[in-house]
Structure formats: C-alpha cells, structure tokens
Image (tube, rainbow, N blue to C red; front, top):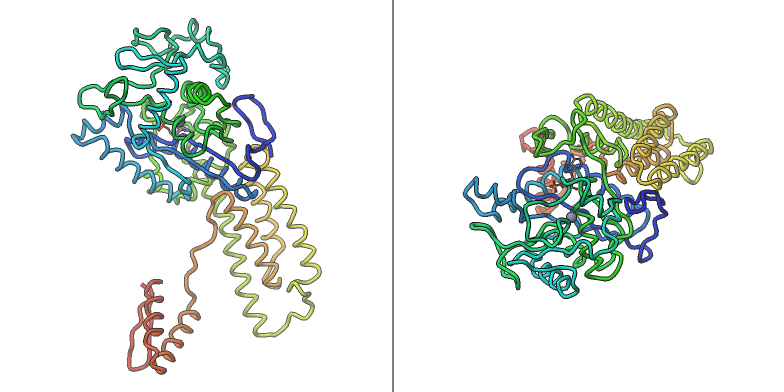
Length: 481
Ligand code: AMP
Ligand code: ZN
C-alpha cells in the first residue's frame, strides 16, 4: 500500500511502526458552531482511511480531538452570555449527531483540550527546561529557530518566512525574541477561562494541544497524522517542532492532508461566510449522498460543491442501491419459483451451477481492483468506479433463474465493498406480510399453550416494527403504522 506523505511530497510504501497496528491522529474541529460541510470532508475521508486500514487487517487506534478552548468559542459565549463550556459542549454534541448521520464512526478516543491542561503544562515545562521555550511576562513562546528542521513539512525556508511573506508571521507580539516564535501559553484576559500554571493564570496555545493529546493517547511516535491542508502551516509544522523537541524522536511517519471543499472555486469557510452547515444539507439530501459526494473525488483533489454534483452523487448512489434491491428481489422470486417447481437439479455443492461458479470466480477480480485503487493512496474515486463495474455485471448477467447462492454472493460483495467506504446501500429491512402472519400464528399458538411471555414478546417485536395487532372476533388482524 502506498500513501502520499506531505513530508516527502511523494507516495511512500506504508510500513507501520508496530506490525499490524496503526496509530492515527486527526485534528478535529473547533467547536463554536455547527460544523460545515468543509469540516465534514476530513471527517469522512479519514474515517474511510480508517475503515480501509481495518479491512486490511490493521488494528487502528484513531484519536481525534475537539478544540474546546479558543478565541472564537469565548467570543460566542460572550455574545450569548453563557460559559465557554456551555458553548463547546453544545457544539460537540451537535457535531457528534452530524458524524453519526454521515456514518463517521466515533474515534477510539475523542480528547478535549480543556481536560488535558496538565499534560500541556508538563510539555511546555520540558520545552522551557530544554531551552526550546521562554517566558516573557507570563506568555511562553517557542524558540522556532532553535529547531533546525523547522519548515520540513510545509517545505518553507525560515529566512523566506521572515523576509518574504510577512503575512505568515505572527505580528503584534513585540516581546518575542524572533517574529517566527509562536505561543505555547498565554495569560488570561478579563472574562476568559483560565488555568493556573508556573508562568501565569492562562490558557494553552492551539498547537500544543494536539502535540499533547497525540502523545497521551498514542505515544511519542505515531504512524499517521492527518487534517485539512490548511493545517500544514503553521499548525502541523508547529506540532512537529514541539513534539520532536520535547520527545527527541520523529513525531509522525506519514502526514496526510485533504484538499479543500470549495464553493465557486473558493475555500468554503466560516470566515468567508460562503458555507453550508451539514445540518442544512441534510435537510435536502440523504446523508449517504453527502458521503458519496465526498468520496467521489480523490481526497487530495479540490472538490467544488454544487447542486449538480450532489445530484450526480445521488444518481450514483441510487444506481448501487437499485442493483442491491434488485438482487434482493431476484433472490425472493427465485426462492418462490424453486419452492413451486422443486427444481435445482444441476446444482453443485456450492449451490451454484458450474457456469455460475465461473462467474463467481471472475467476480474476485473486482475485489482485487477495489483494493488496488485503495492501496494507491486511498483512491476512493476509482474504488467507487469498481463498485459500478460490479453493479453493471449484476445488472447485465443475473436473473431470477440464477441460484440464490450466486445472487447472495454478488449482493454481499456490493454491500461489503460499499461498507468499506462507509456507504450504506442496503434498504432497511421491512417485515414482509408473510413474516408478520407467521409471527401472529406463532403468537396464537403460544397463547393457546398459555405461554403468555412469548405471546407478549411477539406483540412487542411487531410493535417495534410499527405493526399493531387487533384481536377481533374474526381472529387477529394487523396493520402497519
Ligand atoms: P477548524 O474547525 O477550522 O479547525 O477545521 C476542522 C477541520 O476541517 C480541519 O482539518 C480543517 O483543515 C478542515 N477544513 C476546514 N474547512 C475546510 C474546507 N473548506 N475543506 C476541507 N477541509 C476543511
Ligand atoms: Zn491539531
């Protein structure tokens, strides 16, 4: 498997620090508002990376933080006259609802910055002790130039940073030894949340949070560190500086960055005001359509959001869903026909004809092609194309004359490849009329045998599916809700 590493600017063979295990950290959102669909891109993309790694047999320890102390959170809290904690807890809960809707699995751990302050103070202290950080009137800065490798991720040269692009420098902090130095700890201002520290009552800088949470939950060295490409500089560059100077080891082996989700070819962002929240989009579209849309492009390609592309995503997903429900229908038809004719003479031990066994063997090729696409830096666009090929194979080759075993195998293959991408393509199973009637008969028998527990159990089971039973003189009648 090969993955593109921002550090080396090329695709590299993926070799984990520990065989069979992946330690992965994904920078999470700052929680002061509902997340927008740009924020959903890294969530969906790296959830898919995790699912694929698990499919390959890796045990993945996946950590993604919530930044719950920040200027924007404080501003929102002041605007509403509530505490910062109330704001961050509200939007963490909302974010988790959106993630669940998009079938983004919860991380192994979702640390919150405000609950990790002790670790941050300890790391800052180590950096001070080692001469990588200094305190000026309660503010602690990182001494950027002391880290020889600064700039290795963003491929920036320190002197260019200093003299060239001044907008990249943090300005207005004239107490710093060097304009390139960045903040590790800042003293509180009136009305801000704060924690005691050896330097001042204050709060941590943003970058130190991720270095600390990654170290605490994954260890000093990790396999993958990921996030949107806007985080490469300065956030990830600064994380590397802090972690490597503190621990004396390479921090992360592979740095993965998703490109932006754009609108009218400009980055979708809260500050530009050109964003849609996930919530707004889910009022119009099935969440699976949004997930499909995100995965229809390679994660390193910019993706432009438009109603037309969402419509195309909907059609694409429907094509897969229709094939799956058609296969289910063929299986049901076939089962009824077989019951009526009691045929199936030329079947082999697998339940398939020899010709069908040949077809099934050919199908393995799709699985290999799917893995090949994903092994090439998680090319979900090509992986989806393979699912389409399989759909085409099913639509053009299979009928109700085929054995249930073959139909089931193709069905399972489409569902499981889609599932690796986190796409749900199966219809929610409704109880069929015949199943309902069989359960009602069983309930009658249970009542006759005075097994009221079972009778009640069946009534409840049907109620859960929205089926109401009416005991009438003519017998039991039922209706769907
Ligand atoms: P933030 O809350 O701004 O720190 O963003 C959380 C995550 O969403 C980070 O990984 C960002 O890089 C990512 N992100 C923000 N906006 C976009 C966008 N328009 N397209 C893709 N990723 C984005
Ligand atoms: Zn981070």
